[in-house]
Length: 332
Image (cartoon, rainbow, N blue to C red; front, top):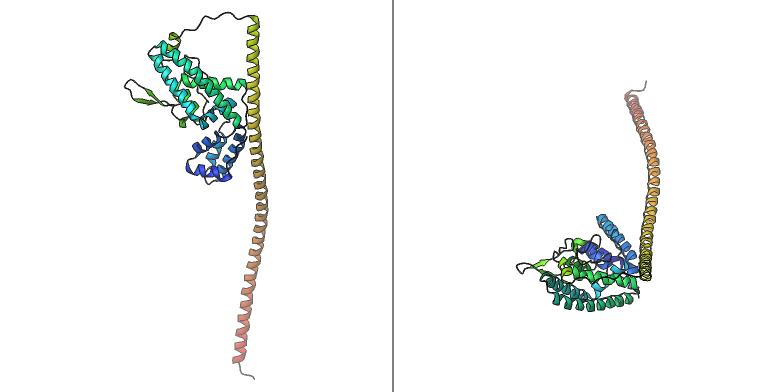
């Protein structure tokens, strides 16, 4: 099922009222396959407006999200409560981690597994409603992204923004890497208040996620002792990694092909416009040259006519004087 694209006047109205942020919000809420065409239409609408060339360029530069990021964006647009629950759980886990409450962390860990399972299924259902079936690899990326949202306040804000561009991951020690993860990161929605030393609410932005207590989680919940994998297990693991890498590469190739098609169409359009304007300019220059020649000829003819008129007037004056003289002279 593909949603209908907004009409031509829609983006022009959005740009006149709220600009790039409103356009981005609409684009990143569209079905995956509609993004490029809608972005091109929005850029054309912006370019057609008075003094909006820079806005058109900004719209055209909005990146298309990966399939996993798009799936999370659809969840943010259609079931935001699911993401709010995960963000709230993440706050509770960080609070338990800060107080070194191992029992509470175990309980919250079980709750997180349940919430993540339900959230991934909800994301798959939303994606399928919009005409795209989510593979197991993409579902794993969605789960990794949602898990990161529970581990880092900045990641939670990125997920809830609805403008996610790529999948996220968390290792339980460092803050989540959010570089190039969100379109228009300065406009991201805060993940929610986090308690500070005085109890005041602190708004966490995507551009500066700071969680200093995360390493304590590993100290409270030590990792189990690892066993040495067999050769078959290692081979299977390598095969799985290779398959996932191949699927990711194929998805990126499809994404790049769509970007190339969009840019090719834009280049063709601009080339046609430039050629048309060049032809018009050449015709205007020819017409101007001919008009200048006609002007010079008309000026010369006018000058000759003026001189001839002066001579004719002088001749007429002489003739009139002669007539007067003859009229005043008596006949012999």
